[in-house]
Each structure stands twice: as C-alpha cells, then as structure tokens.
Length: 182
Image (cartoon, rainbow, N blue to C red; front, side, top):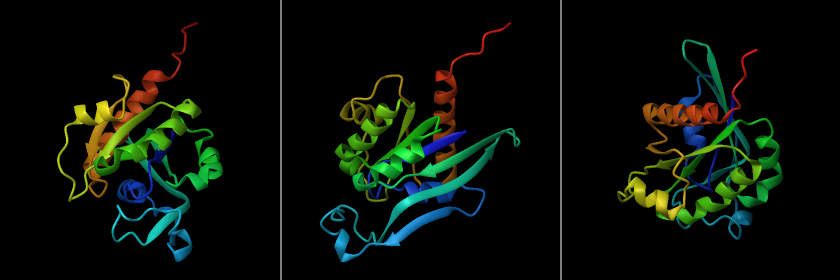
C-alpha cells in the first residue's frame, strides 16, 4: 500500500518516515540557504537547517509480512507542488502531520489531499515544547469531518507512529470498494 506522509514545512515528516522505516530511508534533505529565507518561514521552526526537496521514502511490513506499507514523505512547501502531485499518483491515502502551534499551516496540505481524492488521517505531532491541546479542539480548528481519524504521536517514537499508520490503513481499507461475491 502506497501512503503519503504530508503536512506543512517543519512538522516532522522526515523524522516520521525515518522512525518507522525498516530499510535505510531514501531522503532528499538539503541544507537551507539564504536563498530560501524569503520563501521558507523558519521563525516558528527554530534550529531547522535542512529541508526535504523531493521525497523521503521508507517501507514498513505489518501483519507477519502480509502487509507492506510504502511511505512517501513529501516536501512541505507549496513551491514543490508539481513533485507533490507526482508522488500522489498511485497513493491510496495520506497521513497529514500537524503542529498545534501552527494549525493554519495544515490547510494547504489538507486541500491538496482532498483535491486528489485521497482518504486521510490527521496526526498531531507532539513537540516537546507544545502546550497540550484537546483533540476535539484540533478537530474543530481544522474543521475535520467526524469520520476523519485524528490521532496524536511523537514522530520520534515508533509506537505512536505505527498506531497512526494503522489508523490510516484501516481508514483507507474501509473506503475501498468492496469486491462483490460471484
């Protein structure tokens, strides 16, 4: 199952893919330069010195080897939209990572996923300095459909990341057309 891991700039997509992948990840992180200052707002992501410019790729096998998830982490900046659209081809669903300190930044990613017609799960990435916020408040702020799964995790911790992917995979499988019996 091809799944996208998406969300705004600096929300933890690369960390998420690295945390889960059972293979060495393919990642295309590049050092941020002065040229990116006018386009990448790093004021809310202190210490960020690199950004994904193409893709993060990883793989995770579930259910005793019977179910393989292919994870495609996307760049978070709108200027990479053509690449994002290419990555969406063939995907069955998306995990949208959000940061509660800047929820409004998630709307671009949510719009792109909805325009692509992909089912999605939203995962709140809990950063160490993030004040607690109830998931109901996040759901309301993002105007999520009640059927859209909403989970929380720390992208550096495997267990929560696995739980988020399971929620997404179940949501995707629930939305697939059912095979009719002959």
